Image 1: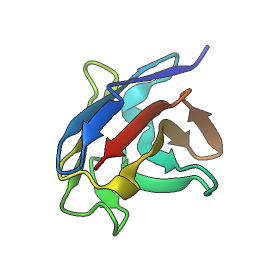
Image 2: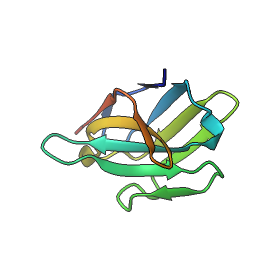
Image 3: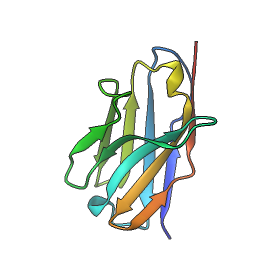
Length: 115
């Protein structure tokens, strides 16, 4: 059974930082492309950042230079370091694992940025 469990969300003031983690089980973690998505109220889910099995990364323009995605294959864990948070970063953040046509999602963790 595949499980992706996010943690680390919470309430933070604008300009602050948060670090999210996603612990994966039930998959061969190191061969999956891993990503973070987010969904704000009333909006579609959007890609935040992705790190491929080979280690290359891509970021949404809105988070470039502020967020960093990393992975620890030995710990089967995905991370997202979020700095200089803005009000518009408020959303539920989801961990995603993808291998060809296989897609798995975590349950999400709430990130709220206050003024």
